[in-house]
Image (cartoon, rainbow, N blue to C red; front, top):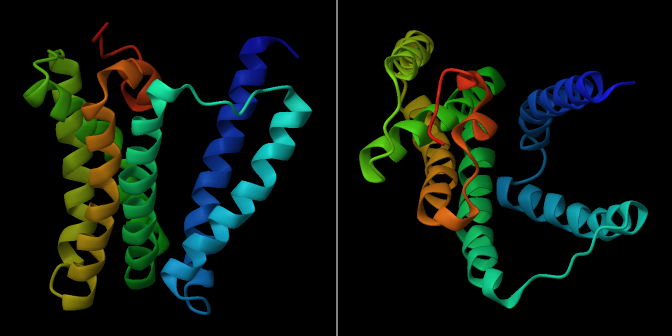
Length: 190
C-alpha cells in the first residue's frame, strides 16, 4: 500500500475510533463515575504505551527541557479535558459532545489570530463562521435545559485547555494545516 493510501487508512481509523469514543463514554459513565473512568483510561494507556514503544522501537525518554510542557499538558490539556469531557458526555448526547470537541481546531485557529497575531485568510473566516453556525443550529434548541447547559459548560471546559495549551507553547505548536484538517489547504500560517 502506498503512503498516501496508508495515511488515508490511518486517518479514517483514527476518526472512527475517536467517534466511537464518545459513544463508549456515554455508555460507561452510566455505570462508572466520570473521573474514575478517566483514571481507568490513563491506567490502560500507561500499560499499553510502553508495549507499543517496544514494538515500534520508539524511545519514551523525555528531554529535561520538555518536562514543564509535559507536566502542564498532563495537568491542563489532559486532566481538565477528561474532567470536562466525561462529565459533559454524561449530561449531553454523544453527538452533541463530539460536535463541541470537534470545534477545537476552529477555536484554536481563531485564538491564534487574536492572541498571536497569526493572520489567516478570508476562507478560514468563512469556514469558521459556517462551523459556528452549524454548532449553533444544533446547540440552540437544547439550551433551555439547565442540565444541558451544564453539559455544554463541561464540554467547553474540555475544549479550552487543549486550545490554550496549544497557544501557550509556541515551540511545540503544529502548523495550522496539520492540526486542523478542516482547514487543510485554506489556511496558510506557515
